[in-house]
Length: 265
Image 1 (tube, rainbow, N blue to C red):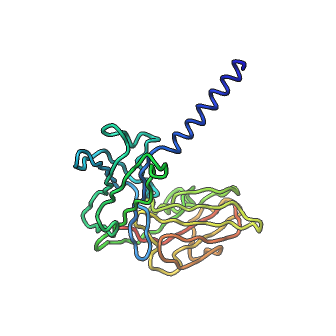
Image 2: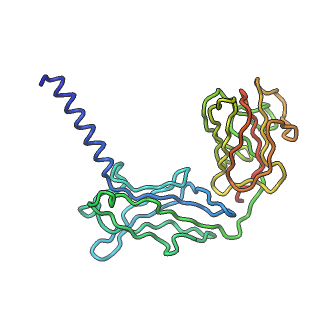
Image 3: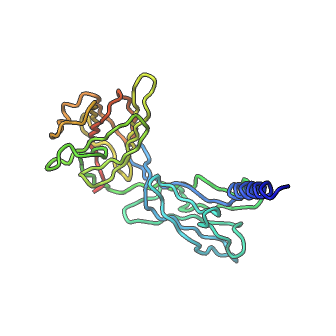
C-alpha cells in the first residue's frame, strides 16, 4: 500500500472511530417547560443539576443551563459528562433549580433517578428527562410586538418590517422594542407561491386577549417610510390564543408582522 493510500485509510479509520465514539458516548438530556394555560413553552436559562451515587450517597457533579429551546444535556461527547470517580456508568439524579413563585408539576418526585450502563449500548443514553413548572399568580402586561428587521421610520414609532429573499429564514420577535419574546420562521415558497410563517412565542409570552392579535402586511417593494397602520393590514388578520401558530400567506419581498402579546411582568 502506498503512503498516500495508507494515510487515507488511517484518516478514514480515525473518522469512523470518531463517529462510533460519539454514537456510543453516554448522555443525559431533557427539556425545561413552563405551563401556560393549556400549553407548555420552553424556558431558557434554567439551571439543571447532576448528582451521582458514590459510596452510598448522591454527590453533586456539575450543572448546566437550558438553551433557547429549553434543552439541556450532559454528554461524554463534549465533556459535559466526565468519569467520576473512575467511570461515567452508574446511578444519577437530575434536579432543577427552585425559584420563588414557581411550582414544579413534573416530575412529581422532584427529580429524576436514572442509570447509565455500558451494555446494552442503548443504556448509555437517557433522554426526555423533562421538567415542567407553573408560575403562581403570574402578572402579565400587554405589549406590541414586531418581527425583527429595519424600522419603518428612523424616529418615533419603532415598528419594524422583515425582508424576505425567497429562502427559509428565522428572525426574532421583539415586544416593547427590546424584549425578545420568540421567533418567526418564514418558509421557502411552495409551488403555488405561498409562504408559511410560524410564530413561536417563548419564555412565558403568549398572544394577548384582544381581537386580531396577529396582523401581517406584505410589500412588493420597500415599505413606505411612515408609521404603519396595523388596523389596515390586508395580507392576514387573525385572533389567536396560546404561544404558537402557523399561517400561510402569499409571497412578498417584505413583511410587516405585528403581534399583540402578553409577557410576564
